[in-house]
Amino acid sequence: MHRAEMFLITAIVLYKILTNLFFLPAMRGIWSLTLRFSPVNYLTNNNAHQIFTAPSILGGIALIAVLAALWNLYEFSLVLHGLDFARRGEACKLRPLFRESFAAIRHAVFPKNWPILFYCAVLIPFTDIFVTSNYITQLAVPEYIMGVIRAKPIYLALYSAIFLAAVLLTVFFALVLPLFTLEHKNFGTAVKESCAYVKHRFFRVLAALARWNFGVLLRMGLLFVLATMLMYGIAAVVGLESTRAMLLLSRALQLVELPFFGFLLDCKVTVAQCTILGLLYFRTRSAGAFAPEERPDGKRSRPRGRLLLTAMVAGVTLVTCGVTAYLLSLPQDDALLAAVGGVTPLVTYHRGDCSIAPENTLPAFRSAILKKGDRIELDVQMTKDGVAVVTHDTNLRRCTGKNAKVYDLTFAEIEQLDAGSWFSTRFAGTRIPSLEEVLQLCQGKIDLNVEIKPSAATPTLEAETVRLLREYGFEGHCVITSQSYETLHKVKELAPDIPTGYILALGVGNYYDLPDADFFSVETTFITSGMVNQIHLRGKTVSAWTIDREEDAKHMMELGADDLITDKPDMVNELLSQNAEMDTTLLSLRDAIQNWFFPSDEEVSDSVEEVIEDVIEDPEEFLDAA
Image 1 (tube, rainbow, N blue to C red):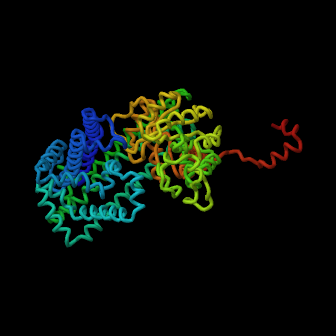
Image 2: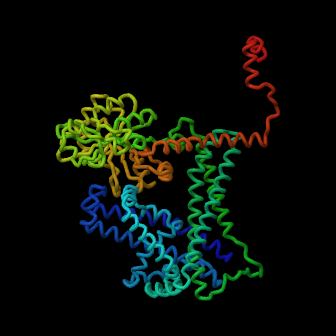
Image 3: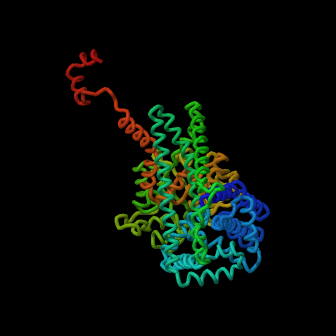
């Protein structure tokens, strides 16, 4: 097994590199071509229904799904064949491995074996979370859909049942991949043999898979923590000589070293996951353990895979040092230094401080102002008599109890509604405010994100909104957003100086260059590093909505989102404070190391209080002594 260590690690690292450099760009290229020859050039929540009416889009999605499943199957075939080579004591060479692993999955193209592609594309990500962490992120259920699922017990029960069924199938199918790739058996035969083996050993197999995955998670987590502590410890030691070098080294570690260790852990976890499947399979075939391999001189082989890992770590460390040296050579006002130093995102209070007071009401906006928020997000609609009002739902039933639409009532009628009792009796009698009232309250105190909710019944809503914003001097203190691109186009014609943002619950395709969108407000589930980079390259920004969980906030900060729209601003602000304290923590660590190992030779005899007393009693003598 030792001789196979370097071989397996090299193979999986090469596979991952090919995935990131060639396969993923190829998939993006196929998707771009698909949209280019389809009726729409991008998909949003407004036109997503066209997926089911455009054959080119359906064909493109099917092609990408099949290729992704085959590529995922090829990855497992590579590692399983590598393990089998090692078990049999055969020579380990990369070219034969890649060739034989590919030949072992060719029968997947036969119709009777197509279900294996479904298995690889859908079932594996449910339980092999570590192996397919990047993939499962794309399969995540959007938070606003999860909210609906949680709100309805029947939906939650159905969702839980589907997840449980997927887990059970994956346990029963534990031997399908080894049988399919190593013995070239058809999918149906592999399923029968796997289920027959697991049937009488279900709990043992389940426990083995759970224990193995938990152990992998624990080991990889500890390794990542130890590596992080070591790297930042080194940065703190560097700080003994230069604080600036320490801070720039910490940025270089974030840019180079930490992503590399994440990549390395992904490779090792893939090998570990395939190993448990391989061991289960070898046990069913009464195969012996991995035989110790000997060199021609009769001595035991040494684990040369560690040499490869050492060389990779050393190479990346040199790159990190090079990046640090380059950053040190730049002038302190260089734009690149500002970029790597990170930009603190805005915190936008979604519908005001809606965790404290009823959404889109003056009390919620006052709370956001008192907390010195960066920006308030609010929703604007128009009444029957042409008054712009601030409320989210077109139907007023949820917040007021009245089953009527905003554009069917006059402002006088809306003023009579209670928009606070649903939240708390403390806010009974709170009204739906007009946009003008909100502008009067917020003028000079906080910026606004004004979402226009257009309707065929209110064609003048855009013009009235722009008029009020100009009247109260908000041109430089607001942005206007909408889920309707036509609305943004109208706003740009009326007020080209006001930034406009396109709201996307689903954002796929070539929408980055839309001329009337200065930024994009995207549901967090669909925000990726690639999306953020593409938008930033065009000089535009990304707003993320709606962030209510700590892990989502951290992820959006890591991706570089420019604006965090949240119902829980206190939580987000706390995370931002912790993030800003990283440099302070490094400085404290540096000072602690200096005090422990390099204590000062001089002892200070006077306390701060004694010095102050000396100055008060005899300032001239103190100055002479100084």
